Length: 447
Image (cartoon, rainbow, N blue to C red; front, side):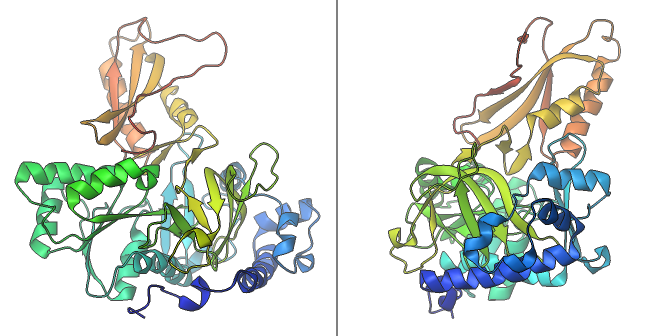
């Protein structure tokens, strides 16, 4: 298989009509199983008047109701900790992960079985193999292994492919750079922002990345991975090609990847996902070349069925024929372009302003506040909360704000928040709708 540019030649080059039939067959089976096994989906389908037996093929997809993040989180609030969306018993799970929630302290929690993890790794194999990773490679993961799902699946994909995995866990940036050099890593996986941070550290250490062993960087977690100027900057500083991927905790794995031909977009893994693009206001499907919200249906995760999930990601779909690689999978031109909602993406972590406010408002010491984002040293996203102390609370302000800072970090997957006191009257006041986000980054959501 290593001689082929495709991880799964049969499906990656399958004629579109055959691919649609395959998707239809998988859709039928998944809807029937979700209705039978998942109380959440049974309520959703019954409420929309949809009988599983009426879903015969891909043309029936639009009969199915949308799933939203809000409904998913609501069911987890009503049935702690994992909700009633699961289609298998909790005891079948071998892994637990979570991502930042929309409402403050409650995260979105996911579980996966052994079979799920085989599938999660399989999807990552499409992306790694498609960008040129092979069994002889040494793959370094600049990634802290925790409950954030991140590159976990990519780690297992490399083992499945036979490549050597170089995990870095909680190493410092200088140590990571040294291991990359000492071990002769040929592939590095990181967020775009952190790839630039490591390049900066390498210069300070006197490590020559441009003439080093790294040939490819595979990035994920930020839109910057598909921004040409950012990719060009990373490639110049590493002397290596940069390939983009995109995934979601809700799906467990990647659903799109950039192939070695780099056509200016990412291929959707269409034998494992159905991706629709809709007008976010009307819910109606839009055509090739039109920007809209991506809606995903996932076939591979057994523990958690995902049917017509509204991602709030903005994309433009174009035919796979735009790429010379021979894949028939459609492309998202420019990857993920932005967001429909107010979610902020900071170094791969989801940050919802309303969730930050829910935490901040638990501290009476804070009078007015502002969320500020900026680009540090021209390469790294940073986030902070500027606050004014409420009159009468000056005495305990320092201790309370230290607790607030820890609270924000703990509820955002370890993302560091800078908390800064400013003089009274510094921050804006609002009479109508408040806007407490000041985003001064060079590229929103990226490097």
